[in-house]
Structures are given as structure tokens and as C-alpha cells.
Length: 163
Image (cartoon, rainbow, N blue to C red; front, top):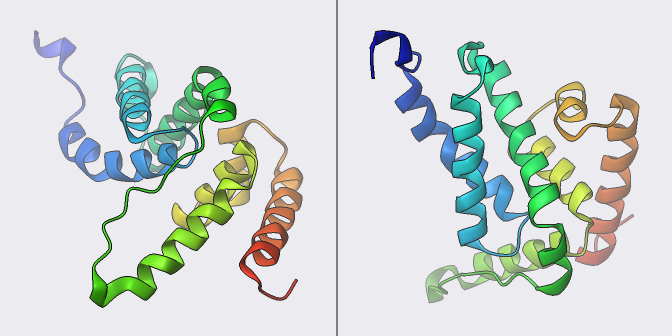
């Protein structure tokens, strides 16, 4: 590797800080942890191979999540229909109530469509604004608002909250 092939400075720390968030996002979209890991790695490889790797961090991250969304949508759509994702949780008796709550939310999220799960995760776990999410998943910004509203209503109904 010569100096012109070197990745932008700080990319290793960017990877270390971004990979867990990307993996968590993908884990909501694909049937198993190994698939999420494979897709996360592929998303980073594609980012490194693009000119957009030199973008400012926020834009680079939005592009990375866009790549991951597209990979998940194309590569794992059929698997999702066939497999029911299982939570891999070790239950510690002192945290049993917290684990039950996490399992309930996880199961509730599983009832949403892949697009709804994606949008909910990007909005609430990643904290992206509607415009950024719209660009990542390829829909209009106004549609994100509607889709988030509907997904929240579904989740509240499933979790026994007020609608």
C-alpha cells in the first residue's frame, strides 16, 4: 500500500466507534447475528472503496447506513420471511425484569415490516433526523413522518400502551 492508497486518517477509530451501531441496526433487519456481521463488514468495504469515505463524519455515516440498508434489503429479504429471529439473551436474575422488557420490545419490533424496523431504529436508536433517514432508506421525508407515526402506534398496541 503506498501513501495514495492509505485510508483517511482516523478511519480505524471511526470503524471502532461506528461498527457496533451499524451492527445493532443491521441485527434488527436480518435473521441472525452472523448475517448482521457479514453485512456490516461488506458495508464498510464498500464505503472504503468509494470516494465518499473522505466525507465529513456525519455524511460518511449516513452513506454507510445507506449502503447497509440496501445490502440488507437486497441480500436478506427472503431469509427474513423464512426465519424468526431469536433474541440471544443471557438472563441474569438480578436483571430479569429488564431482560423481559428488552425481549418484549424485541418481539414487538419483529412484528414490524423491515422498512418500519429500519426507520424506527434509525430514528430512535441512531437519532437521525427525518431528512437523513429519508435519504438512507430511499423514501420522501414526509413519508418518514407518516411511517414513524404508524410504527409507533403498532408498537404501543403490541406493548399494551395507550394508542
